[in-house]
Image (cartoon, rainbow, N blue to C red; front, side):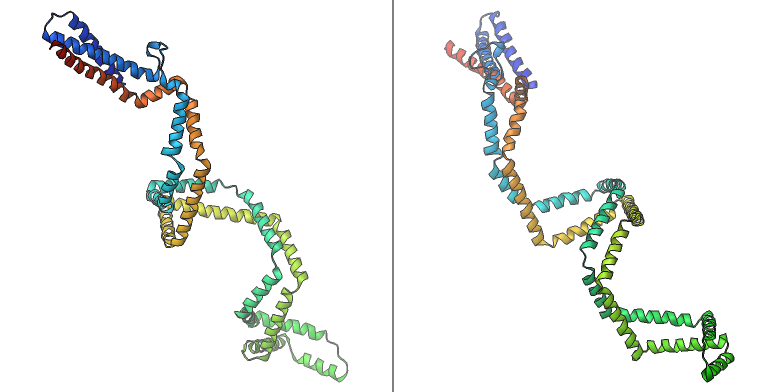
Length: 413
């Protein structure tokens, strides 16, 4: 250290100066200088001895009351631990400091500072993309299947189906389905190929009818006067007329069909046997290879889309990520009670942690100091406080020199 060299230099100057004055002719100046150098040499040696005695034996001699730090090593360590635990870092001061810190606000500022840096956002998105790509999706499929199976087993399908059916009926969805079906049938009956099919079908069925007597003769005469086209047109017209009747709001047939549909639906959702069979079928299908492959494919597609979105935002400098963060911050900042609640919970957790682990500070200091040998401990202390101690030697030599001058003047008088 420079201060140690300076202290040694000052002591050497005093010694050399004293030796030189011994061989110079006697006069007032020489006498004064000899007295100053002599006193400075004595003071420098005394302070050198005192400073050295703190850390080691001077000149390696086991002089009593020297090497004080090593002799009192345990006391010093215990004093350091006690000072740290009871004065510097006592529990009360740490807890009081924690009570003054707005933890959520501080965390928000740190996160805002982090997300405001474009490079940081890009690195975060890069890590997120790599993390998503490394996800073992094939291992997630059995968990999804197990969760879905558990849900199906515990689900009360009867109540669920009844609620859905009631909601659909209240919203008029059953009537809408009926109208949609009637519109589809009406469109189908208007086609020429439908007319031809109906005529051919009616002709084939009429030829199978067997009636005897006068009714049979009349029926056969009727059949003989008609052809496939006529029969198809008649059936087509009747179907279209019936459909128009069903689509009329005040049609009694329409009300009857709607009533029957509703009764059939409620009977279906109330059939425990059918529902149990449906549940069993769903559980079996859920474990099939087809469903496993479907879930695997869906998860891969979701991952691909997520990676695409993340990479696109990374190329744009993380603007969407920062926008999402800003939106969350604005939303959370309005929830003062929520923030206050989290402040209290986090603070209480930290205080409990401090109370439970405060003693570990002393243990950590003791373990670190115990792991150091005597030489390392002395070097550490000299490195930290030796500079100031070396100045004691310099000051001792200088003060001794000045005091020597004064005492020599006194002796001369």
